[in-house]
Length: 246
Figure (cartoon, rainbow, N blue to C red):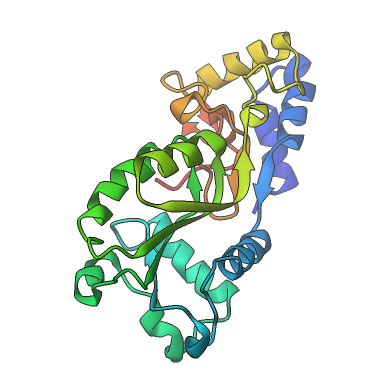
């Protein structure tokens, strides 16, 4: 939980002249809270053709799988969030939620749907790399959906183009959401230059965030590394307000 004191400490890392600008950056942050994620997952799932909470009304078999390899990673926690959001925590729904290692035994076919669940995609790199693992397990020709809370439009295009997954996303971010892009009109070029100076202090290697994404996105459980580092970097030279938990 971010307190007023934490905000004050974060602002004190900026010079007096730049604290108003820093406050504006903070005001521009897109915070996607737990309740919003729950609502998004319900709407995304209900929008998928062939889905119904009642087994007899569903088209084929359905499997919800974490889009990650290890327990505790974002995909795993997002599957749990999906179960909570859709009121499918009872044992009668357990067969719908499986891990990647179980896909071979389940042998999903052309009439089945596999929903891979994750939280965010900024560049599409991670998604396309992870797909190489799933591709070997899904040779039976099922419909494959990648369900995301948020993603950039370029990531969604890349995923659709380079994989067999059908990405569905609740919040799509464009160039206007990249603080350093000319399409972002909320800050002047001089202000963007000042912000970049602080971002370089927070993370000299990736001052614009991973993939030079320049995003101002914070999820309730995690801050994507595509967001600018003054928001999340945590090292001797800087303390972000929304630190990551890598």
